[in-house]
Image (cartoon, rainbow, N blue to C red):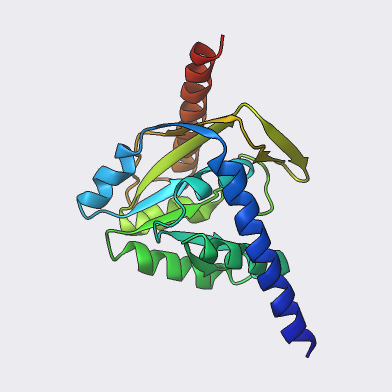
Amino acid sequence: MKNKHDNLSITFQAIIIKWILYFIYKTNKWDIRGTENFERALADNKSVVLSCWHGQLLTSFMHLADKNYYGLAGLNKDGELISKVGSRLGWKMLRGSSSKGGSKIFVEIVKKLRKPPCLIGITPDGPTGPEKIPKPGVIKAAQKTGALIIPISSISTKHWKIKNWHTFFLEKPFGKIFLQYGNPIQFNLDDDFEICKEALSQAMDDVENRNKNYVKNIIK
């Protein structure tokens, strides 16, 4: 009976959160650049991994709602809630984390990416950090499948900052969101991991800097 009540509670919370997120992100103005970087790849029958730092994940998560792309959620109670919210927002949710069920979810990600066109959104530093330090999963999945990695940056004029192991951004209503999809990068199976890790970090920094410079020129 407890499990049934838990499921009903999580389902109810997911419904409420979905509509709160819709309200927040629909009332923002959006300035989106670089979508052709992943749309072109999918049109060419390639698989794509969207790489977004965990603290910024909500923006691209909401931008790509209702597209039936793949997202990830953990196996804990929070992950269950995230999974239900994601499903209601039109994402196909995969369950697992690097600490629990890591190898199983990695196999599942690789299996999906090997059937292009496929797009999976992954936070390379999530869900436990350290902040903005890529973990092996994104890189190794891309190496095994030849999937393109698209780095993402988001900046908003109005937001809350939630502090835990990192700074998590939740946009406020009636602001403006600047979302930049970066140029694709690709790794070969025999590429050195540390070199790939540095390249991914650099790509994430580059797209962040491009977005920041763009915003500076817009907001003066």
